[in-house]
Amino acid sequence: MNHEDAPFEIHVHGDVKLRADVGFDALQDALKPLWKYAGARSLAAGAASLYEDEPGIRFDPQEHLLQMCWTLQGDDDFRQQLDDLCMNLNDLSAEGSQIEVSFYDAEFDEEDEEQGRESRDDFLLLFVGPTPAAIMQAQRNLLVEDVVALMERHFDGAELGGVVAEIDKLFEGRYSALTSSLDLGRPPRGQGGSAGHGGGRRPRHLH
Image 1: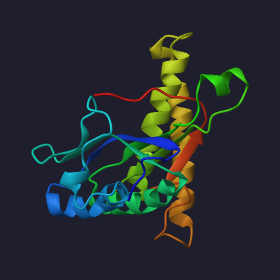
Image 2: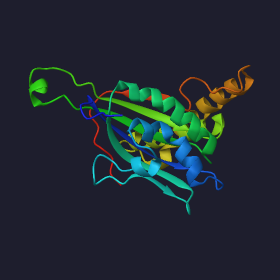
Image 3: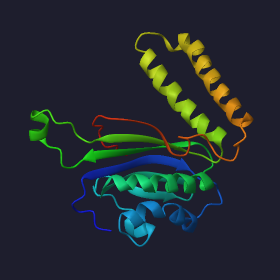
Image 4: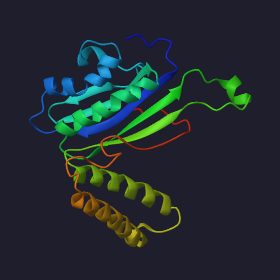
């Protein structure tokens, strides 16, 4: 698939801990939504990033770790690949993990900014995991990290135990609601898929 004139540069970033029995072939199948969209015929052929200073898509069999710091050119239709990607990685993951997907408006320039036009940049935060509980744990950990980092500007870390406890209560309530629902086989909307997004240009992540 040729995306040379695509309106976005899309950056996929995240580390996913995989089960010990997951090999390269299974991972290649799971990541097919990515490398096929990029126009490659295999993971090896599509693993390189658009930028040489990014490691691309890597598999560490010793650590059972998938590492992604990978940029490609694409359009809004790339979003359709993300649901399949998350479902596939749910089946291979050993614990909850987050994946960041950034859309950078390749057609936005200084002239647009000077004229007050808004870019079409977007940011998606995805979560994958072997179970809904594992996904919630990853969401909880990220929220605690963000809240503590923000509040430590004003309070000592030792004072924030109550805040963390309240966050844990929120997630305990969400998990209880999930387990008591009739639709136990399907995580609530947003888990294993987009859990949140916001605008604003964000720097590309480099390892």
